[in-house]
Length: 326
Ligand SMILES: NC(=O)c1ccc[n+]([C@@H]2O[C@H](COP(=O)([O-])OP(=O)(O)OC[C@H]3O[C@@H](n4cnc5c(N)ncnc54)[C@H](OP(=O)(O)O)[C@@H]3O)[C@@H](O)[C@H]2O)c1
Image (cartoon, rainbow, N blue to C red; front, side, top):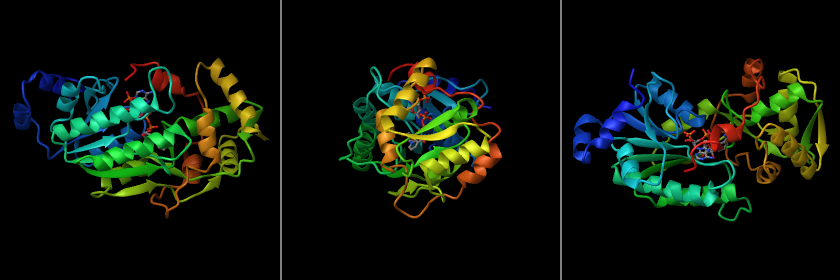
């Protein structure tokens, strides 16, 4: 087992990259942002299973004894960031924010990703695999999707060999959205669906996203999208049935659904759903317009994991915002 912190700290004290080249072989080390979180965790697990060494850039170290090396995810000190990337063959980048809050803005997340790309090139990284989102667009009225398009351009413009993987709605055990829908279904008498619920989603498993990232070839750009498409209404009813929830599915104007989500969110000291996310969902942006690239069935996964789903609420603010702002 590799001590999760020591190797990178030792490297930082070294005066130049020359010494690093002696101690770190580029043949077997990859960097994953967020390997203790959600998608990054699945990518790291797959890489480890394939015999790679993994270093993560994250805001907090992982559990003691983790086989994943740790370096700080920060963008203020480019020298330190470059050192933390040195020796890596591939960088798998999952870094992004779900919504702006305080100092965390989409503009800043775009700038931070540009910094990461610059430092990766300076560190001699060979390949940059970027996790984007389905249907990013420079013209989108939604800053999340506009920011993702800006980052994709930066990835293409960088001198690094790259791949871009665009997931739809990612499901898996560390997920927030599907888990919290199940949580509401288990506890509340009604589940408000914004609008008529006919807009589509195409869930993809976190393991399939990881596989598509790790196997992506040079200059590949592809959606990560599962084999099943559902209306949002069907999705929430499937979740309700799986967890034997009693909530009545109620179609309401989007403003009413958002109002209810914000009341419950405030009681939980969280943001359950933003207006922009609701608009993206209602615009069916979480579907792919290409043939499915992933195999795992959402329905089968739901049945297999229903027992664990929605047992506790997972807070986005606790997981991602009550920590260092970067
Ligand atoms: N989840 C989905 O359904 C979904 C769907 C489509 C696309 N995507 C994209 O997939 C990628 C990974 O998503 P994920 O849900 O798996 O994310 P995540 O694991 O929660 O976070 C990914 C990375 O971003 C960092 N991060 C997250 N929120 C942050 C904040 N507020 N301030 C600073 N850093 C923050 C995390 O830092 P730490 O390492 O310190 O935790 C981690 O390194 C993202 O680019 C996302 O846009 C996700």
